[in-house]
Length: 224
Image (cartoon, rainbow, N blue to C red; front, top):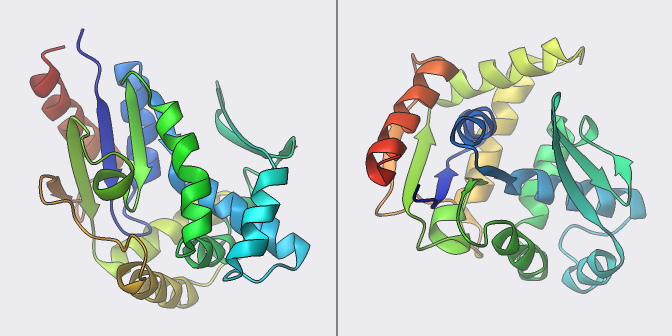
C-alpha cells in the first residue's frame, strides 16, 4: 500500500474539515487540521491580550504553549495547554482571529514544523489554505474545494445552529466574504489554488458525494 500526503485547500466554509476528516478515516490516514491550529493560536492571543499582528509577542507565547490534536470515537479534540478548546475554536470570532494570526510570519513558522512532523512518512490528509502551496508543496495528491459565499455561509450557519449557538446568517455571510478578502490578499502565504490541484466545486453536492469523489481519485492515484 502506497501512502502519500494529501492536501485539501479552499476558502472558509467550503467543507474542507468534514471532507478531510472522513477521507483520512476511510484511508486509515492521519488527519492534520491546520485551521484548528491557527484558531487555537488566535484564541490564546486574545485571552492574553496580545495583538494579532505582534509577531514577537506571538512567537514568545507559542514557545510556552502547547497545542495537541487528538482523534477519538467522537471526532477530533483540540487542546490548548491541556484544556479542551474544541468548541471554542469553532466560533466566528475564532475564525477571524485565525485569519489575522495566520498572516504573521512568526506564527506560520512556528506551526510549519509541527504540521510537517505530523505528516512524516506519508499517510496524512492535511486541510487548510496553503497546505498544497507552502506546507506540502510535494504532496502526492492536491485538492482545492470551492463553493459560492452564500452556500458556504449557509453550511456554517447550519453547523453552528446544530451546536446550539445563536448565529445570524447575514452576519456569517459578511464575515465569510471578509475572510476571503483577508486570506487572498495577505502578504504571507495567501489563499490560492495550487497549480497542480484538482478543483472540486461543492455547490450542489453533499459531503458524502464530495468525499466519495476524492476517495476514488486518491485510490486510483495510489492503487490502493
